[in-house]
Image (cartoon, rainbow, N blue to C red; front, side, top):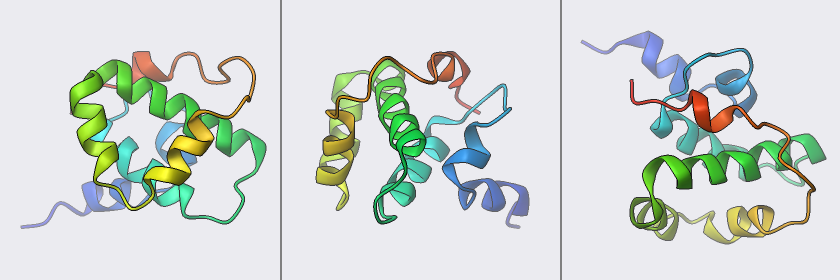
Length: 102
């Protein structure tokens, strides 16, 4: 039996997954980051959320698991470009604290 609530979260936007949620599953966040970066020219706050989300996943997973995940993505270059962008200080400082295995 398929749990439809998990499917809806898995297909939710990056903003739906992160806004107002006390807990964020790392795999769900990773999938949302991958989907979001496929959009043409995400606006500034979305790029900021992508950057902060990548940093939060790196901190949560550690470098080895994070790099293994990132290296196999077709969107790798787009994600890295946003991650390395000069977007200023973190815009979502509590994001890492809310990532937890569900």
